[in-house]
Image: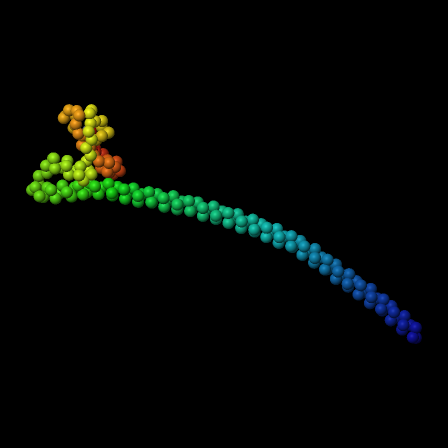
Amino acid sequence: MTTDLDALAARLREDAKELCAEDQRDEHFQVADRALVSRFRTAEIEEAAADALLAARAKIDRLHQEQAEEDAGHTLALKAACDQRDAALQRAKEAETLALFGLACLDEARRELGDLDGGWIEDTGRTMGVLTAVEVTERCTADEGACRCEEYGFPTTCVRDSEAVKAYRAARPVPPGEGAPGG
Ligand SMILES: [Zn+2]
């Protein structure tokens, strides 16, 4: 009887050992499978991450490019605005010469009850920087503006627009048909 029981127990132990070994094998297989799956997933994640990085870098580059273009546009617009402002200031300075002369004419006309003397106009214009006297020995060209010095014979003094008046004439918008008299 004892021998039978011992034999049974021994067989059970053997079975149990085998079963245990099978379980462990399965477990090892599962671990191995999980590791394999995990490796594939890691590769997929790495690839997705690399794609995302590339996309992000491309987007940053695009944004930088857009920003640079926008900055360049702003710089150009700013420069254009500054140029316009400088030109307007320059025109205002040139116009002031004429404005002060106009004011002097107005005051003189009031003082003289409306009459302005040609000699006074020329003298005042020269003093106030509206007219410039140039000694000439021959006929002036149209470039020199309105003058009648030819009527006086040469050499003579030609009274021309000053540089400020020339610049103001050149810069202001001239309506069609209007311009310097004579020529
Ligand atoms: Zn002349």
